[in-house]
Length: 253
Image (cartoon, rainbow, N blue to C red; front, side, top):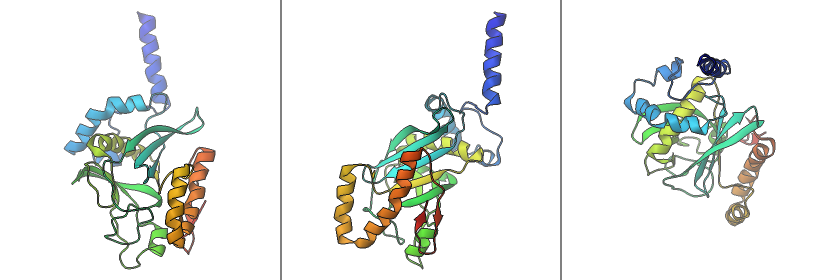
């Protein structure tokens, strides 16, 4: 009996020593502390903690995370860093629950476009009109250079529900889970990149679709060829590149 108790205590100590914790536990970080009193956030943690623990079995939690969205496939991928991989490991894919716009970047307010490019998570809205929502830093420097100089639009979010006017909806259950995962990741001090592509560049269907659009608009071809190396970097090296944006709005990796 004593030996069994010692093993349990050792397991707990080891988990704490590597920074791991169950998703049901609230941290005392500033970001989480500012969210924990909102009813939807509290319910989300209660509802999704067990599922999150299953997703991150074998990982330190919270983990470094990356999101990759693909408009043709209407999918949002969650990746997390693993020391044992090494690199980022695919954790889960969340299907879009609605879609609007067309292929190509967002360039002005009201164009109904989901942006394309390289972004990061900026904020968490616990009282969203779409259950819960997570903001990204659109417009970034590239969007401000290449988009409408007076009104490029803004307030692009990943959210719940099943409607959209240019954001990425993944349903209420999906956003509850992702909200807690990314809230904990940001609270732990990790930057969360968000890469949004027209489609999966490695897929032949994707390239045929882009070829058709590019034949009608050469600026789209140049834009997508600028995004492609960022996609390939992640695929080849197992993690997100360091990205800069030049004074013409071009991404450099």
